[in-house]
Image (cartoon, rainbow, N blue to C red; front, top):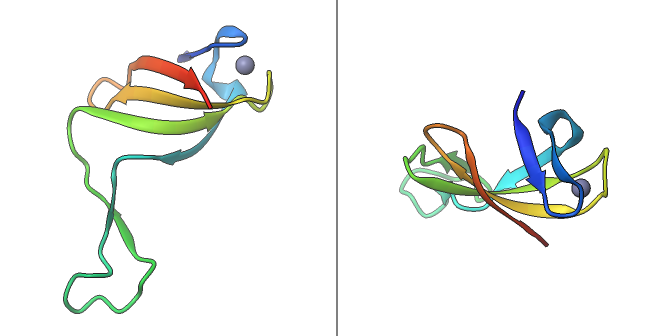
Length: 81
Ligand SMILES: [Zn+2]
């Protein structure tokens, strides 16, 4: 079971949250040669930290910005938005 440290509710099961998106790991490809679709994105798949947007849908309903290790998936920091 993976726990997410909600700053309002304390550590809660990940199943109470909904993942919205990654803030850091999207790379736009619409400037690349031969790519016609302006809204095309690809994951960079890098090591290090990723910043993700989650919402505590089965708890306080608040939006959170979580810092996660891309290799271990451990959460390192959380802040309310
Ligand atoms: Zn909460």
